[in-house]
Length: 113
Image (tube, rainbow, N blue to C red; front, side, top):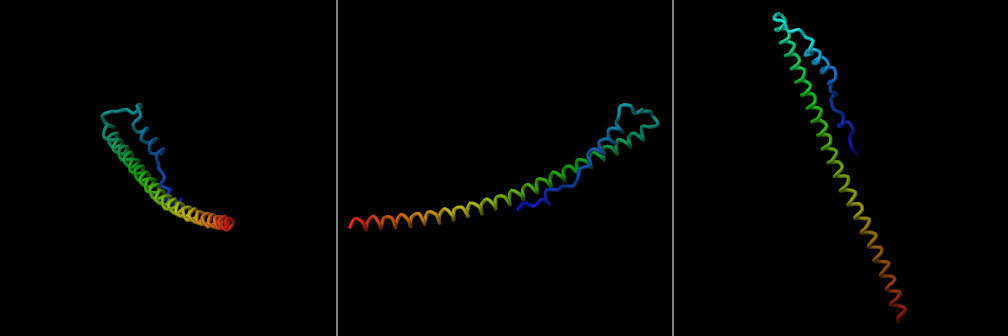
């Protein structure tokens, strides 16, 4: 009924990227005049990694919401079908009960004569 294939989203590589970003921006880094260009490049790399993380997170979240939306649609269809089926069964039961009540009434009317 519900497809589990849609629930799988691309894996987030959050842990590895965050660790490298933290190590690049750690307070122990020396900010000397010679290494400012390298650290600026490192900062650009960290920002690029964070943007990639956000992009991955956004795509995973979008995939999850799309799967959830599709599953709710499937659930809605399933519930509608179930209600229609129960309505049919209840109508059938009510018809038989009315038939039995009519037979009993005919018996009662036949005894009165």
